[in-house]
Image 1: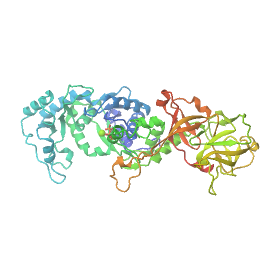
Image 2: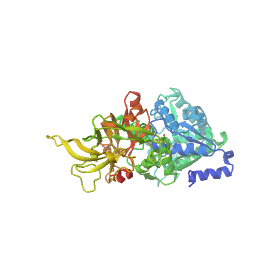
Image 3: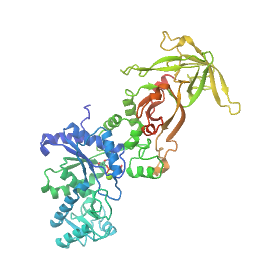
Length: 557
Ligand code: ATP
Ligand code: MG
């Protein structure tokens, strides 16, 4: 396959370039509303719009669609810019706001009124809804539509001057109250909102609707290909209507194309729902590592490369479908495999005492950071001591037949170290809890020394008494499977075990010098990330990015 295959949007652009439309230029835009943090669905749109600009030697504008002053905020703008940069894209100075064009949009609206293409309507929101008709019956024409142009112009000016309260009047396009497409039944272009806007302050008390502001912003900026998600398919006719009625003023005529949005399973993919989780404090913030926000993925330790590969893998199509989380996890592992050095950490420690190993002896074992199939070199010293730690679940007192890890009388290999055999167990008399496992080691089985003694079926990871304690967080799916009905309230589906904090993990000493945002593979446990926020607060804590594919664990069970 070519780097991006040739999806239908790229094929359209190829044709446009061949036909020398827009003088062969390609200008796209990513138009977020600054009312929340971006999520991985937005990444798909970012990769598409910025990716196309890169491939065709064009530009992609970052444009904030700030037409609803009641929901928008600069905080979100800053996070959106950070996210786009994190993904590795650049708007090359083309940072715009719909509000940059409010004056121009107002002037063009006055022209539409003069051309009898728009009118001020004094029906209430409810009356407008009632007179719209239905899919099978036409709507009725507003009694305001017949008034003379001068009156509409006057009312529109007074709307701007702040003479009317919210909801008194709206500006509507004069199209067709019997149109098959309901969006074409004299849609709203402007509404009154006495609200403070974070950029234009109190200059405006009327704000353009998306369907008017968006095509105009595209036309003003000279956007050639305006790419959005499928739910805007029905808006395209209105998009074209707006563009056609102002086209005399602009060089190029932009076109809207729709593609299928990304829908990732087992998580929440809408800013409205994400905001609820944040506000209800179900998560710790927009950057909670369990969220599919780009800030959350970044905090968890996901790489921008993996996100981009995922978006590429999912591809661009016209058919909506949902994608399993495991596909994203596949991309993470695939990317981290060659990037994250291997180290050992024990998440749920169980003490092992090697009775025949000298108490004061410390052997430094040379342990490679990389497996053989990764063309990288480097190793660190791993101390081996009389007392060490293994995972609790790598030991079973009464194991089933196919358990190839440690059990009474059974032998197992300690990775990079020796083979040990369990001889007895220290138990808490009262609770039955296993406090420590006693073993003997065979000095002739040292790893790396030919012929390494005999073959044993299982190899497990471990850390020595020189290890240190740190916090590790494990994440699971944010949402549980919905039971039957699709429409179950998502809050009822929150997985109560989506976060597990392990405060007593033991890490090999080399990790003491780990720095903010470093990534490692903890052997058999997954890929982990040094939490940057905690690191800067003086605490070393690791977030699990993703578990490992089971192959290593299975092979060495
Ligand atoms: P949400 O529905 O998640 O709250 P939104 O569509 O309201 O998001 P916008 O800020 O309007 O968010 O989106 C900016 C751009 O990102 C739009 O062009 C939109 O089509 C695109 N986009 C949003 N969600 C997705 C998605 N899940 N997959 C692909 N593109 C998306
Ligand atoms: Mg939107």
